Image 1 (cartoon, one colour):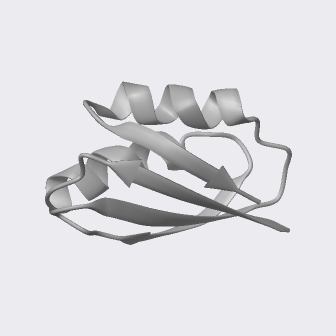
Image 2 (cartoon, rainbow, N blue to C red; image 1 turned 90 degrees about the vertical axis):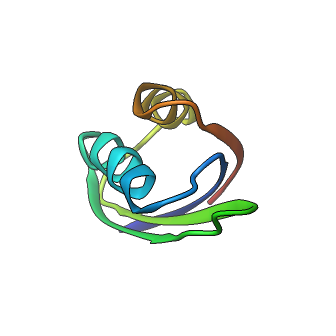
Length: 75
């Protein structure tokens, strides 16, 4: 198991959380996700994975979710 933390701009409501969560959980290897919504700033997302997930996969998932900006990835 590995942990990945993301910081995302543009998430303003629970619908945003749902869209982003759906795209991230569709990535093979994502086991769990926890979102801390900051509607007026940068939201934080914590992923638990059991496989290798690339930065490119994470960027693509956030792009697919809508008009959000992935500003940081930490492992």
